[in-house]
Each structure stands twice: as C-alpha cells, then as structure tokens.
Amino acid sequence: MKILSSREVYQCGVFRVTEDEAEEPGGFRIRRSVVRHRGSAVMLAVDAKGRALLVRQYRLPAEKSLWELPAGSLDPGEKPLAGAKRELREETGYHARQWKKLVSYWPSPGFVSEKMHVFLARDLVAGDAQPMEDERIECRWFAPRELDALIRQGKIEDGKTLIGFMLWQRYR
Image (cartoon, rainbow, N blue to C red):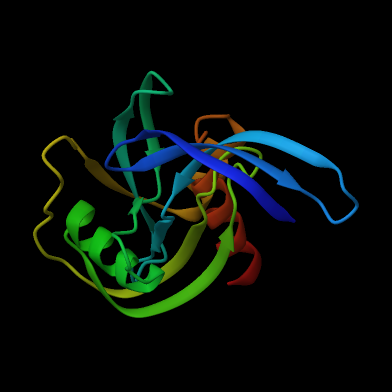
C-alpha cells in the first residue's frame, strides 16, 4: 500500500482526522477519512478472589453509562504497558505487581487507526484514584459468573471489555 496524499482536516487533544488517498500494489486506489489515534491501554485487573474490576462512567457517544474495563489513551511516545500502569492507577487507584499482555487489536480498522493493548493485572495494591477532571468513575468488582451473565443479558456492551473478559476466561 502506498499513500499518495494525506491532508489533516481536524485535530484535538485525543485524535486527528486525515483525508487520505492510497494505492494498492495492483493499482487499485482508495480514498478514506481516517481518525488517527495514538492507541490505548486496557487493564483487566483481577484480585486474589478471582474477580475483575470494572469501571462505570457516562459515555457521550453511547448516551449512557457503561460498565467496562479501565482503559485510556496512550500519551505521546508512551509504551502500552507504561500506559496501562498509569491508567490503572489514575482510574482505580490500584497498582499491580504482575502484568501479562493478553492481546492487541484494532477495534474499528475501517476508519480508526487506534490499536488497543489489553493487559491482565494481578497482585493488586490499593491506593487513591486520580481521575481526570472530566471523569466521574465508579469502580466495582465482578465475579466471572456475574460478568458472564451480564454479557449474555446484553448489559456489557463495550468491545474491549467483551474481548478482555472472553480471552481471560479462555486462557486462565
């Protein structure tokens, strides 16, 4: 794939949007508007009882509050694991002594360049959360059977949470 042109049409603190034209090796050309994003770190924090920590916050695009795994955008130049450690501390107050990468994936590769990196965090130590000024976060522990039931009932709607939970259940 060869990028023929790229023009930035919007920029904010979290992402930017470009209008791009590219050519595949066979000569086929495509035009797309692309949301450019640095990527995100997602944390599946599991306590000594085998419960997962979820956060609940209002999500404007969804127009409701969602239970989801803690996550956040990577800072410029930040590695995914460093971002996961920072975001877990900021959103929940917890620090983890053990980290394992579960998966990296593209949540919506048709128009968004964001890559999400999901980590399992264990051996947790409680601390004080430091949410961003515009975040109102509620934390709660869920047993695997509770999460499974909520997923089956359609009450967990967040993609990173579905992927993280299912991978954890599959490979634990």
